[in-house]
Image 1 (cartoon, one colour):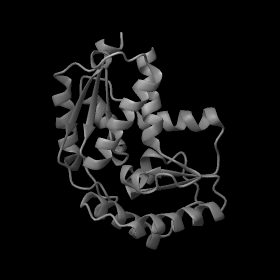
Image 2: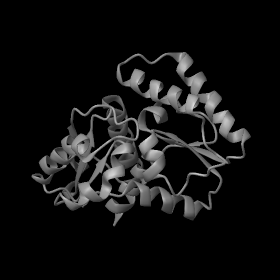
Image 3: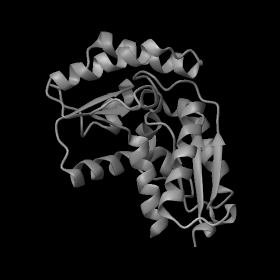
Image 4: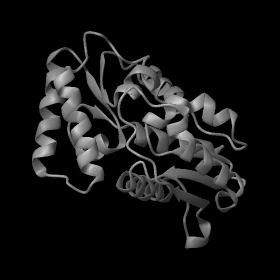
Length: 223
């Protein structure tokens, strides 16, 4: 039964994205299962941890240690599986999954499986440097990349969003970068950062990995 399931979520990277993920997961549960009362939901443990912005290439296991500790805290609840609401954190998937007891869903594999099943090719990817170089390396095309100047803009959008300094003009800046990738030949653009996914919500020809992750959670719960 659904209510016997336990889902662990590592959030806080950043907090608004984690809250949105939780809300969208609840909506997906309502859509896919018969919910007659609040007693029908699975147990969901959201562990909102404090971690600096995971931006740049020089991120080490030391920087990821708070996430590892957060996953170990979730282990105490014996979840059926855990997820992390952060694309960059999955750069250290093997390290995190090996050093914790509960299953950690592999976002990279899930997204790759999605692209294969939908026969999606020619993908532009927007995210942090470490995410592009590791998590979605399979999707990155050297002809469909953003410039260093555009990457700087993306990094600034992420950090400002997490500071609560989002402006309407930020979506315009992101739209310009997305349009550039589409003009280069991208059929879709993967918004490979939770904050970028929130800023770009509703922009056409974009794909949010967090929605793909939610769909995978629903599939696992259905068994």
